[in-house]
Image (tube, rainbow, N blue to C red; front, side):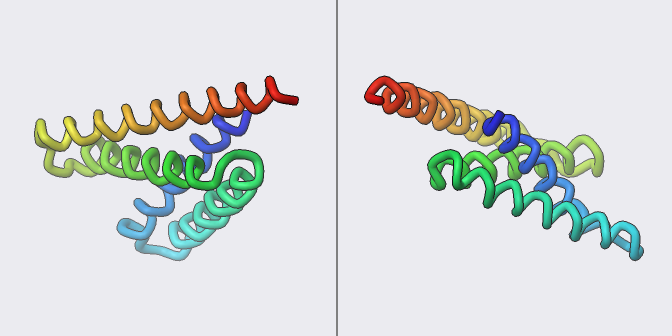
Length: 112
């Protein structure tokens, strides 16, 4: 469940980052502020449940990935093959961190 919440938190991060750039009325600004609050409240909660460095790295990585992909898909940002190489390396790093943290949690669970 905590890993799912990291993804949800990152989705709200993408929403507020895009909101900062594209908000042009009070409603959009309010949604941006709400997204910031939800994103960071989830982040604070998750740092109490999982290793802080892992949570923050995955949160930022997924947020970056989501923001880049949304800019390409929704806002017609420049697409380049090298950009995709770096996005894929980011995905590999996120998967690797999740895998390593899951192994560590399982190992610590065996000790108790």
